[in-house]
Image (tube, rainbow, N blue to C red; front, side, top):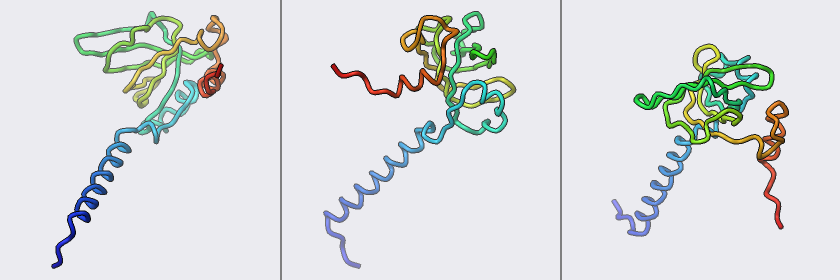
Length: 153
C-alpha cells in the first residue's frame, strides 16, 4: 500500500471537518425548513402542522401571562385582529418588554387544540412600524416594512 503524502492527508482531514461543520449547521437551524403562518391559518390547520417547525405572530394578551420562575415556564395567550386566540407555553426566560401591545414572534410547534409549544419567544413593538393604534396593525404591512433595506442618507 502506498503512503499518502502529508498534504493529501491534511486536505482530506480538512474536507471531513468542513463537512461535519456544514452538517451541524444544517441540523441546528430547524427554521430553514419551517413554515410561516398567520395565527388564523395555524389555528385552522393545526393538525397538519403538528410535526412542523412553525413561525407565527400574535398580539400579547397581558392579563393572560403566567410566569413560573421556579420551573422557568411562561404561559400566555396571543390574539389576532379577527379575534382568534391561541395559548402559548414556553420553557425559557420572559422577555423584558412583555406587556400589552407588543407583537410576539413565536417559533415552535402546535400541540393540543389551540395550544402552541414555543421554543423561542421574541417581541416587537408595532408602533415602530405603524401607527400607535393596535386596531390598525396589519401583519402583511409589518412584514413588508421589515424586509425593506434601511434608508441611506
